[in-house]
Length: 82
Image 1 (cartoon, rainbow, N blue to C red):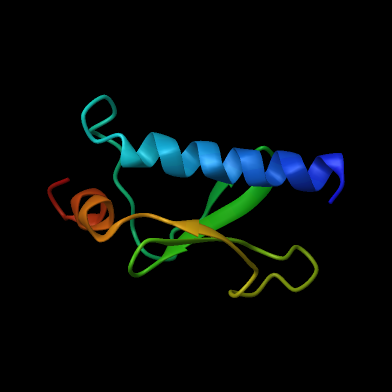
Image 2 (image 1 turned 90 degrees about the vertical axis):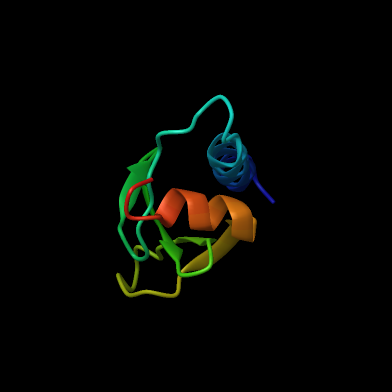
């Protein structure tokens, strides 16, 4: 693992930690397959709260698995009324 790879994992871990904090950060809503940029990389969640980083070489879904949210957090974040 090189420094860039470590940074990528730290970024994903920090995002998951932030989104899992429902008490201090209650307003971040998520939608399945909605893409967002973080540190120049494109990420998205699949149904169930699984976080992936898109592979820039292919530009298709699949990419690299980065982690997941608990069912409780995913259902809270993906609820229509948030």
